[in-house]
Length: 293
Image 1: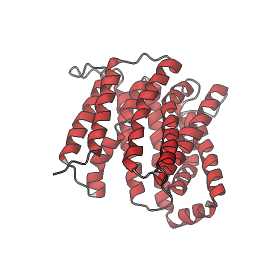
Image 2: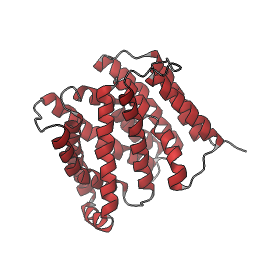
Image 3: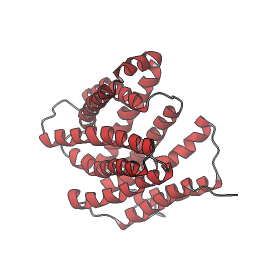
Image 4: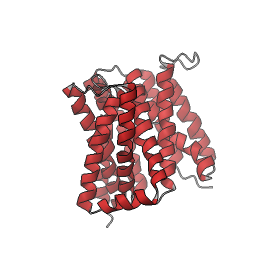
């Protein structure tokens, strides 16, 4: 049954989880490398999602789904969490968290562009306006407001943050082509990713996971960013009478995240970050508008 109050409750819970992850990423990367952080977080999330599926009596769906589409799930796991989070964590390792988080927020705009060749969708006039505004906001953030000089403090970090949006948008485009249970799909993505991330850790890092602070951060990320937040959002969508109203809650997340970065990480929030973020949020709002002819 639809219940808008329950939808708001679950939606705000998901937003609360997402608001804390930029802080968790930045603090945890002080103790673990990106590959180490992802390895522990992926295993943690996999165990959590398996437990949820067991409670729902859906474990058999895992076997049926992977047997039916093994290549599809291998590709999903390669993109998310493997490549997506490795790239995103590298961006957080190189940039101030406020920049990495806000640049990553342009993934919905990237999705609009990718939907044209891969889903056959057309871009409306308002979408073009949103794309221009969104990427101008990204430029303001990346150059700390000095947009005309194109002077990037860390060009590779900026490129990695923008590449993460491409990977995340690609992951969701793949999801639209498959009508399986979303929780089963996410669980299989993480299970498939464990050996891939283990290999990446062996190649680019090591298995000396000694800092307890890194363990706490990685487990937190696995439970809340990669697990509970997704389940809460699914519940919010299930109960929502008005999906758009619930979707708009996501705009709270980046602003709440900046406050946490300021108080917990000690990052000075640049004026350019706030201006760029407002431009990106405005672009996302423009995308959602239904303009009458």
